[in-house]
Image 1 (cartoon, rainbow, N blue to C red):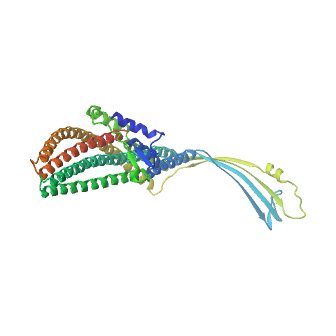
Image 2 (cartoon, rainbow, N blue to C red):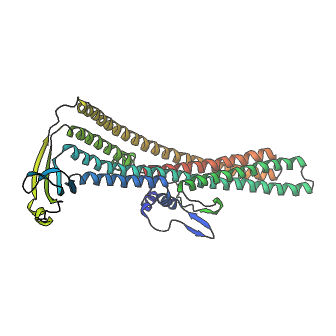
Image 3 (cartoon, rainbow, N blue to C red):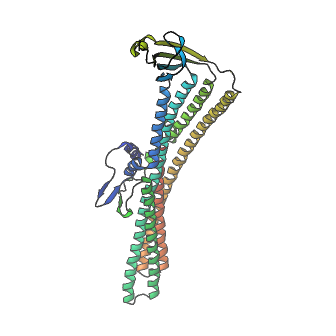
Length: 440
């Protein structure tokens, strides 16, 4: 498993993940992981969601600072008005200006405190969800990459079968020219060659289809015939597998799915406090400084008190506090609290369900790895027998002791044995990657 630990560390790598030589794209499994993290649009959307939640959390934190505003008004008054300097009514026209600065803040607001806690939990949950999305994408990429490698190995086996058919046709043509065999025997070999050729073509299509799936997930456009894969996979080794409890402990401690469920519980708990806060007393403080300027618009009145003098003389300051105590709102908040409590209990149950699913996922992957090791060992034993059986059947066929039908059966048995080996090997590869990813 240590090789796959290096794959996870490579997520943070900023080195070269691929190179292009003569127009060819060279990729490894590590390179595919890093390329996906850079290019995959779903992952980019999750990163944007994290940034959005961080901004919302900052907005909730700044709510505790005072609200400050400044303002100015200008009015024209005509007809009978109160003359500000004498406080008597006069038939004059006036120009007045008001200037003010107001600052207010909540000294006690339980709802805002809970909203801030909720926003902090939402940030952590979005980060955990982003890791979940990354894990799922990387797991799918590993599956597609291994699918390409599997089809590549299988295609090599099919080409070996086709090459053997070519060899036998050439041998039978020579034998037919010398009159050693009948034409019917050559026809059987030609039919077998046609089957092998069809299988190779289908194998090439399967490999290209798997490659297209991988490139689509990587969000990378390149001709499939320009992609070169490096088989950097390691041999099946059961000694690298640790005890199952080791992986269960890791998945419960580190897995982002479990963390996301934890943060859901925190969010539900903060929602209860947010609703309860709306029915608790709210204490606010307000400060205001204000001044005004008045000027008569009558032509025979002089501006005795200039703007600066009036602004300074007319300045007033005020400070005050307000206490709001909700009494009754139709029991709405009471029912909202009950609903929030139910959501909190559901979040706790969901967390337990998530942990149960994670344990099951680990146990299944662990069991699949064990099954793959058993299958790999037994398939290799069968392959040894099938290889020897094919070798003797080939000698008998070339000596004329068996017909083309029996030789085709031996050839097919060899292919099946080889296919069983690589199927078990790639089952082990994939579940090893899966087990390592889900415990990160």
